[in-house]
Length: 402
Image (tube, rainbow, N blue to C red; front, side, top):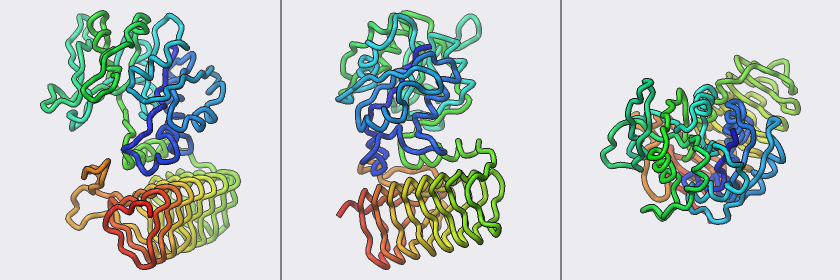
């Protein structure tokens, strides 16, 4: 099954993490997000990958190269991100005349369900959610064989007809390659859902329910993605671990990583090559410590992502947070991750206050952000790329670049 991976968008809701990299290249359990999508596609039977690139495309091209897990890779350029139908139209010259799959490169799919999707062509993936008003909601009817058939889709309805949403995974019939010249939607974009609507009129489109699916569009969903994939780790210790360190459960310490004396790591946790932990540090929850990151003396890190080169030097606490590349926390920096009233943490996304749905959620720091010693960061706060705090500062609202 020839498969189009959509990886051209800017990921504005994920800022500041996407200021300097495309969202599909954000780290999830040691691989870029789009790498997990591609791996699921190959496991499902992808014979060829056509990766649509645009924003910061060099990183995506370098990651894939000419092949991925033995499957040939080609690239299609979408210089201006005008919508998903436009992205597939950019990929169309690379497709042969047969059916084709389309997957969002910023979503995680369970492998078995994706295999069923590929085997059910033409088909659309579905998932049930608590709040379908934020998604495209599928309209369905029962087929004679007992499976559900898609009859249409409504984008972000105020009064959703059901809780069954479009999971952004499709297998289109060959004729759909000629249906990509769609008009602009109310959002001013060329939407692939218009192509799905036509497929529903001209073919029997099977609705395939996904057992597990995650749309990774906002920073806390990057935490959820890592929680999912880190849970699959199997213990492996190849790095330099001090005899007085205590590794518990599914902990992976890659070759070239260092774990010093007095460290306790409770898995699942991944310590990548070049990273260092300790002495006397505590790492727990589902935590990713990327290459060249440093967790220093008497630091506690819980359920967090530390990207390449991030440093939490000493005497600090980081919980349920995402630290971008080369972030540096001064000594005694403390992250709050829980409200006193136990309500879900809220944060700003594109200027709007949004609930994360998480009882525990800390901070998000763009690349190069630095805190002064004894800085306190409130739950849900973002530090923009290259932001700074002064010693002893209490940061209660987002800190923009200065």
